[in-house]
Image 1 (cartoon, one colour):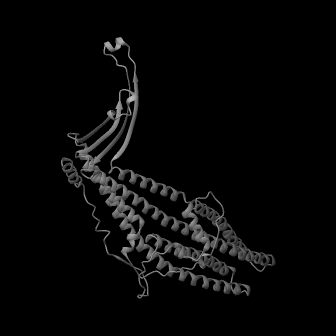
Image 2 (tube, helix red, strand yellow; image 1 turned 90 degrees about the vertical axis):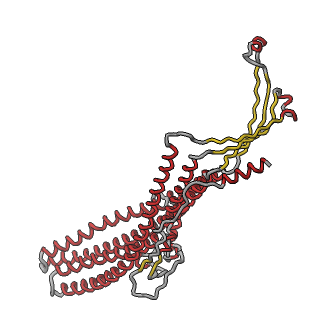
Image 3 (cartoon, one colour; image 1 turned 60 degrees about the horizontal axis):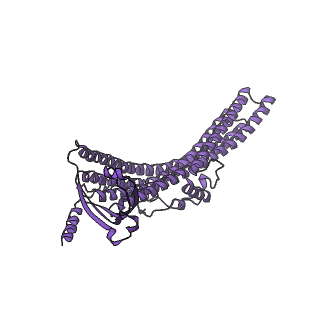
Length: 461
């Protein structure tokens, strides 16, 4: 009966748990919605999480993304941290249960008759074998809070891995589009160089025959040299971007395979007109920041529990004998049971300050969490606006290029028939070259805006 009462008393104490309970920030419960600039008011929201691979019909890009997810060194580091957090959670969880151990020993001592008479030693030859049971009763929730903190830390690492996957996919795709943009700019420059080489040849012939002034020839040489000088700069950037992609892929170097050009990229989904803020709850970085805050809240409870007594139970059962020959004997059995209550009395406010330290760390974690939420709202707004307005800009750039090509064709015909000077042709050539380069850059920026929207929404919409 006494044992039953003791167990019931322990259960009552074990039900006590100190420390604050986690309450979600009101900021995260904000029901704000994002509105995409659109002329179509009938477009409905889509909350299906799309895989990035489904957005593009470019097999080369898909292979690059899969390689990065499999071989990226930061990803391998994050996976190792997850396993570390998982094992740590298992260790902390095991502290709630009793631990069982054993101890074996033999000893021998020899002493002469004079030493025995002087009580300086006694001859003996004994041994023992003991099984020990230890159990710390979680009176005030210290172990439970520590276990919950460890689980929340594990969940934080899992979300950080998801966030790294989103960021990694976005970086590879963004760099791939930049690489294809540079390829296109190089093609434009090389094509323009051939055209200006032909113009330079014609001006040389006309100058030799006295049809053109030397100024026309010098201007043709300048325009040819300007484009020729631009090509090495583009080639240098291509190498830098390729090396950056190789680093993301976990490779030391090598040529990056090319698939479709930026102009050939085909996007399957349409951007919804309104994106509810609930989508941001899928953002792994927000979830990771919240798990970190939850874990820190649990650590306050651990620090508070350290200010209260700790109850430990120990039990042992074994055999022992002064003679090894009689060790395995019913008369050699012994056992013990003990309980101890330990706690602080006066520690110069160290334990109180430890609680306050954890509280301040929780305030820091709260600020990080709320900042992450606010940053997410801003990123979504910016990405939606960028994608819409860059689309409008690209349409205008496309019209500009078409008009520039037609204007250059007319200027060349006017020059060939002697209706205008070569200066007009140079102006149109420069205008077209700049327009084509800007069109290529704007198209890449438009693709990047969709990449950033994918990332801002945590991997889809």
